[in-house]
Image 1 (cartoon, rainbow, N blue to C red):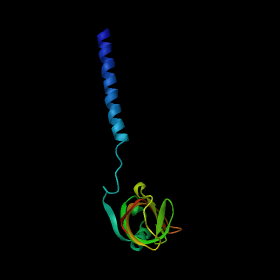
Image 2: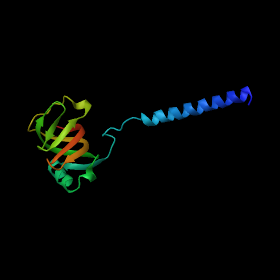
Image 3: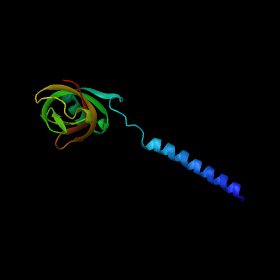
Image 4: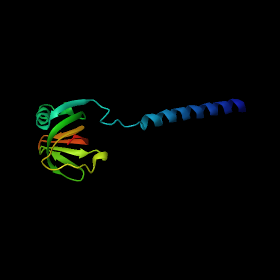
Length: 130
């Protein structure tokens, strides 16, 4: 193989690696979807949602929900709604002004359900109205 053919093969190989690297990077580091962009799978009261979860928790795993309920307690990372739904704050709502006993409507992603303690965990929680 002559020197010019080797040079062309090396350039083509480098170009292919660069293109594959670029598209791999774009795929791996694509922008995360916000819960505002996703469709709501359930909208209603926290008590009704708990009943639905008890029937089939797997169906509701990793879906977006809108819940209305009463704030039971508040901590640094979130709050408890209706004494059995832990809502972890979205990063933009870390210091939101809510009070214990207040009725609120939230939107978040259902992360899991502990059937022993009958607790639901929701993350990326945003307050829709106070």
